[in-house]
Amino acid sequence: MSTAREHVRVPVGPERAMSVWTDVRRWPAFVEGFGRLVEQDPAWPELGARSVWESIPRGRGRVSERVVAAAHGRLLATEVLEERLTGTQTVRFEPADVADVADVAIELDYRLVRGGPLGRVTDVLFIRRAMTEALQRTLERFAMEVEEEDGP
Image (cartoon, rainbow, N blue to C red; front, side, top):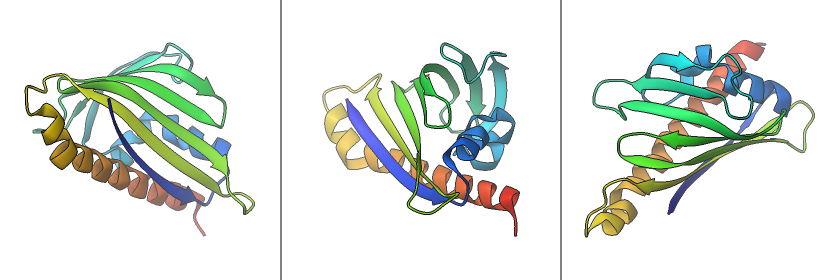
């Protein structure tokens, strides 16, 4: 199992940050490689609910996310299934040391579906870095999305 993680600070409280994160209609603005929503359980983001989306061309392909843990305004963990990997993505929304500011941390624990004999080396040298950079870009755009909504 490998892990990629990143974090960002946003100018809204944890509950509002989680509300923006779980609003699938907003994913095109910040989720790295998001192409289009294919299917969404009406109960999203409740425990057991599922969301399926497709990436942009030459991206991740079809991605299925099923909520495996949720705490209102604090945490969302999804089981992620896609062609090349399976894993768990956990997003935490914590109050910062400043009022109405949240620290948002994302962690993806993943396993490559097809690793082959050099899979571990390839993961360490290339894939983990690429995953971390993708998470970083997602969080940077997420912060911009929250700031635009919040406005001056």
